[in-house]
Length: 213
Image (cartoon, rainbow, N blue to C red; front, side, top):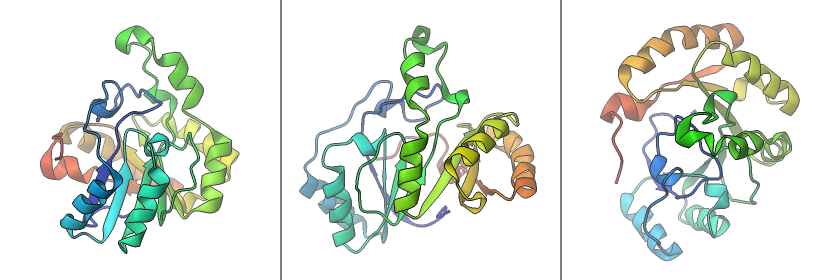
């Protein structure tokens, strides 16, 4: 919903899921990164001079001291968004809970011999956690879509969680403009028909599938 808003991203490393198409494998499949104290992170954020902060991952809700981090960002006067898969609850401080429940299209049945598939499938959809997050925060539900058939699973999740259709955002899966443009053609029509929001992958359009600082 805030696509195009100048924002500073704080990316945490490590994830409890293993999406087969994960575009930040350096935070999930092979976690890396440097240990930074809370003060150093907030100082870096302050230097960026943005009014919006996005805490993302990996899975930020399993990050050490994430509640303190979000409070620190809020104390800087920032609008705070959390990007989460919605599998874990933490009493974070945020203005927008951007929840991206993972569909069956994310399960890594073949990647690394499928060794993560069982855990991923068991954890990827936690309706009670979703309902708690949706009840306590302003939210959006962002679904990563690979095929029109994904809509059946999305509708089931909306029914089970009571999510409002006006808060649903659909985004095509892909890391290159060609794939995204092809999928956008039919995904936009679904959004128009079902009264969902459509989200581009703006960073891919602008910079390609490149890693940020």
